[in-house]
Image (cartoon, rainbow, N blue to C red; front, side, top):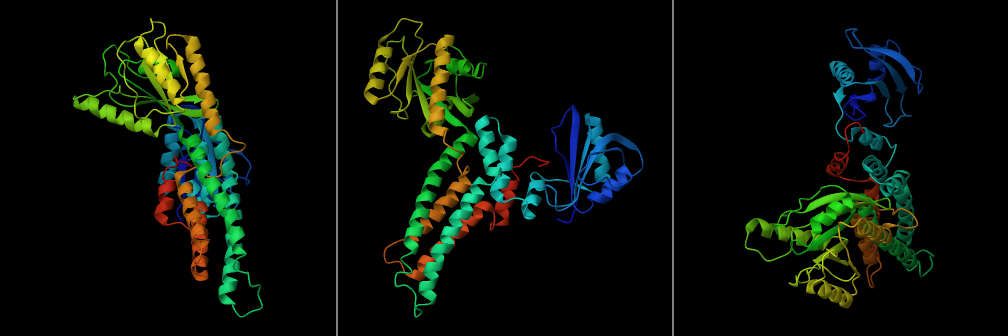
Length: 445
């Protein structure tokens, strides 16, 4: 990291102000060339910006942030210029002409991580904060940036260190005057730790769903009203609606914010047997999406006589919606209500053309989302990577506590559990893993 990088930190397009960031050993030199002299540290200064040939670029506010008190821990600077695309392009061209390199996605945060300004879990919190679309996502990301997972991981590691000390004392000093139960003292410590790890793994699923969205699948036979209901819920024409069966061929996802949480609604292909290749693939994708959803809305056209059948993916806890209640009720509606009653599934007659029905359904979905995702505080673990490492640490602790396990092997399992936890915060992590994580960041961050 001996080169100096730069990147726009604000979105492309016309705006009142655009921010261009620098980081690296040549930051002070560039400031002197472009502004004439080095501004006072950490104070906004109004300066005329000029390129290396002395041509004026813009009048800007300039910040000089010497190491180590900067975001990256390196010498850094910021140019706050007028946000016209021509101004930004001229400044970018001038910086490139001075030999600076455009930053890769996430490179500023990667440098902050490398200089110890934050750990890997906190860096992921920054990425989540930048991507946050809802209040719940913002709150969760801010907690992770504040070190919630890092602090909990540190306490878990202390517990492992204590247990390891007991095991190693029994192995390395068998002839010393130590308590006879010295190795056994590790078991209660490990049991408490294992319980906490298992709770964190269970809570990690909630964190992932807050980040990615609570998934709701609309399933049912063709022409049961799925596309019409989806459009009513999201208040726009997200899906094509026609009277022709099989119009929806692929899964159509539409985001929605309910009670401060991101929800992904999916209109799926009508479930029926078909020899038509494209429609059959649509049905397969519909079943796959529905199977992985957090909640399924089973739609049945209550006005028809033909019974549509119960989808395999639907079960207790899902919701049965008997649609088109503005039409005379037919045998299918009564049948669906009875099936739902037998399965312990709530049911209701609705019409997508009724504002009160749509409002009721939004409220019902909001209650389901809050019940599934709300908690006293944000979860410590929020990503699949975290969950997998917590599971690995838990497996190692479980092995260390096994009956008849040699003390040497138990101690090694505890060491491996500690290594798994260290990889959460990036104390140890393969270079390719770090590269993959930071590559998901936006340029300029």
